[in-house]
Length: 353
Image 1 (cartoon, rainbow, N blue to C red):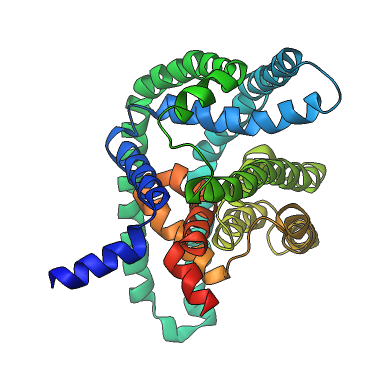
Image 2 (cartoon, rainbow, N blue to C red):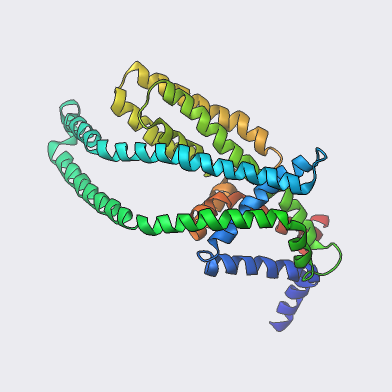
């Protein structure tokens, strides 16, 4: 037994670079699992700085000094936050309040529609429908209680938001400004030379950076493209629904299906089975079609080379482990695993054989 373990260890971990890579990955997982909540502002700052670094490099290619490029990129970041806080957030908050206030009327319409079903479909039975409605009403009571508890906890959420608004921008600025010093400090703990860890990092660095920047651009384009037809046709809660549609692209395949339901329900409650309803749904589906068949291939054709089943499994696994952050970084993390497996010495030897 010990001989088998020794052979397995020598086969997979004979290269010191492999051991270092394994320790780095395990340390990262441990930090996120046990200190993720505490270090959330730090992790968010690293992600934002990583995204802005791409813009800094593009500005530097124009012959601009890095210090000026950092200030320019950071200014764009701050202006984006200001626009979100004073533009989008109040509008979405107002529309959400209106949606909650109008929810009873919408539910009454749905209940009236359900009560007419036995006339059209006698096999359903009025008794079964009454049981369904009673169960539905009890679930609504539970939902109302949860909404109240969420509103009571909003004070803590506001405090957390204020911490993020102060700490994250400061960390982002210093991470961008002192990137070279930070990288030199980290390299002191790594062995000299380029081995497996450096090879994997180069591969993941390119793919992950392009993916994150491309995903943020996709969220913006899909959200704006959805808002235009919704607002032009006068659909209620257009900004809120467009925000949800934009964010839904974070979850491949599943997000597009899930967000279609509230869009269709709001449109149906507002217009019924009318030409306006059909026109809006066609416009919405056109946006989804263009996103899946034109925008995604343009943005991610060279970034993600995984089977759709692997992507869905990655979203489920990492989303279950780390919530929203896990869902957003599911594909980059899966790309990391793919790069490690492709670069692992034993895997390469099997490919040669």
